[in-house]
Length: 345
Image (cartoon, rainbow, N blue to C red):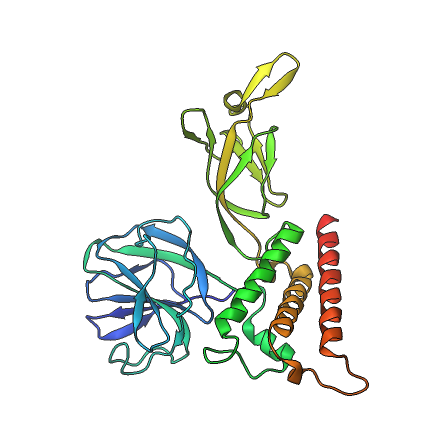
């Protein structure tokens, strides 16, 4: 997974500080400092790890737009004051920009590569946040738009092509969701918020796994949601690879009625928030199949929805566009079936 680019504009130094490879660094200690977070593709979720939570006034998060160096507000309440992961659906007018020696500040940037940026500024500071790590989850992760370009021998989707680059990312994302649903696995760190279950047994199976971290868990007591604590000596524990959440004997009396000879189901409601998913780099055995399914399904969508017949070479030994779509659809489904069988083994 791509590491985010993190630059801190230090007004007192009049320069950028590149924090991309740093840990445990303080940010926005002065009202004139600005924090920039960038990635080569649009991102939708952030998993923060702050050793010191920030306390700021007037904190504003903005994203780079199609109009260079014009910024728009991001719809989030996160203010460097929490370690809770959060999701912000990417805006359609979010665009890459490259910093220059004159913009957005009059100083040489660490590099001039175009990225999708977040800009974070403040009006007052009580406590400066200290960042250990920031993990950004790309909106389209299993394959990139450039891989679609290469497969179709296309010069590149962007903000002026039909369809635009963000439309292709939307198509990729839809087929990523198909793979996750079809296999009941995910290959990107995914923040699952308030997943609901009925408690039917001493354990429940989470929808997505492997489980990386449990963020919160609670059951409904009839009057409100009661928080549960993770740990074998506490209320529940998790088998991360199988996605099974087990309730301990300490918890069972609260969520089941005990009757001689068996547990009687009280059907208590249960909700859990967690992070699930290995990255493709961590599961190289299946990564190729995952990428193939998403790539071919994305190409089929594009061929069906737009006139790319010119990209399919003709001739007596070539497939027609219709046959090409049919063949790609068949191959994608065969790969999806093989992926599901490998997971079931």
